[in-house]
Length: 367
Image (cartoon, rainbow, N blue to C red; front, side):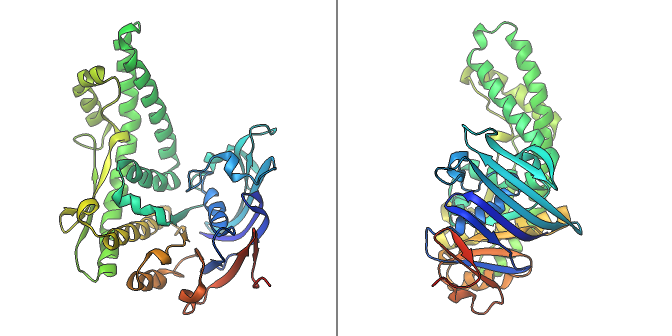
């Protein structure tokens, strides 16, 4: 997987910008607030139209404009491909995020999933360890939606069913044939939920040993890092989920919302057998995140057949010298695009430097 060319029009503060990344390492350099992360975000949007910053459509469009356009050329599977992603404002002719792949209309940008793959590492990801289960589920889902197109379909349908079931549970006593409707929801939830759980289990089984090895290299074996998928049922299958839903039926009716399913699962992250969230220092927690994200890139490459593009947003400033050195040695193995305010750390690399200032990108320093 290699991004060859990126062109942006009216994306955030970038009126027009062109980026031709190096096949190995590209360093986006410039002061804060100039557009470095916006360029990185644009690359990520090619994976399926969602921002890693959780931004709404209006936030992606330059102020005063009706549309934002991102065009990318990339190589995948030995062939050249193109993506054109358009973000339209509410009052435009075509609002929302829509996409074309090789010139063919794909409809909503989410349909791009599985074509262009990337893994993003940004400072806020420390919440992957310190935060609640939602962030860790999001980590799994973001990776799996890129690898397996059916996973995205199953996840969307499952979450829609959860919302419908919650609505039923809130008004169960006044809903005609409520029991039959609840049975129907649970049957469908077990089907889609079983698919989600099976994929999560397989991905975590592949991820865990790679992440553990990465952490061992970062920490020089100071402690052991383990991660484990906490399935919501006895097994990651539709049958096991159906049994779980039957067991909690009474509790759900009393609570008025869904109490079991993939939307309530978690990953267990431990250092030497203790929860990393509680007992890990901030440095250890950063090492856990770094180990997991690099493992995600490795496993995604093995499952998909091509290593994803690695996107690193100002991560060196969050790492000590030892972790910086480790990460720098991993850069360039596959295509990597990194943002920084200071290129000094990259003096020992052969990466391409791109200067970003005032919403413009250039391979020569600005005057």
